[in-house]
Image 1 (cartoon, rainbow, N blue to C red):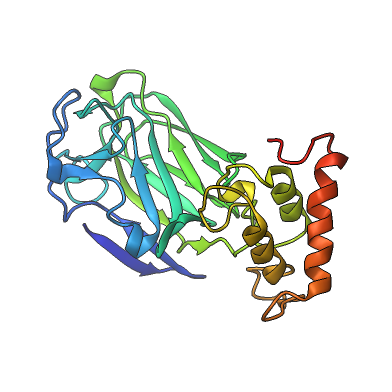
Image 2: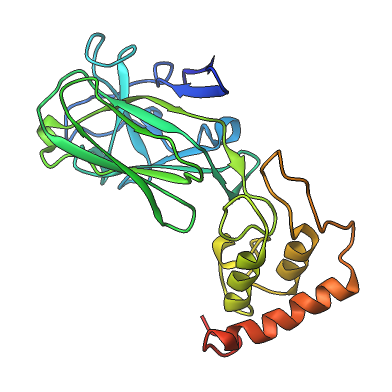
Length: 275
């Protein structure tokens, strides 16, 4: 997989152009060869995962002169076939642990050079699924969808209405990912009271990271509360010092958090253990 790191004015960028992977047929409805299926192969290096209807995207050989770099690009899939009407999802997680969400503050992708004049809107979301930004571009050939906003955890390209004139995507570019801090349930770059509220709302029930389940066990429980307490006050902002961090959680701190878990759900009109 061709992945080049280029130095920008502020920070390095990951650029993925797909040209070292075997490109399969680009025609809509073609079977996707096994060696042209891309999903999480790049996650250990760059923290990015590709998804579509078949839980992978198709690396397609569009031909030199038809993409913004090289010959290969990617398209959506469904039922094991190339399907340009299917959405393509880019998501970010920790390179060392796929359970831990990660974010980037910039992302872009380019369409192939075969324009068809359609208007396509792509969208960026945070880890909770909240819409952060949208970018609408006309498919004129080589168009670029760009997002520059903090907290991007996923990007959705919706596909095209007409699969026979679909858009293949190339030159996926993003800033290096930042994994979520332990205890940062809403993945906003800091461990604070908002995260405690989230954990309290889901305490005792099954959940994922954004529910306060930081260790990927069956439920949100005391172990997750300890994780949050140990990291309370931390921030990914390099200009902000870590505050409130102790090697082991002080008994008074844990007592406060334990009481909060008991009473916060009632404050929101929910009984303990309710979703």
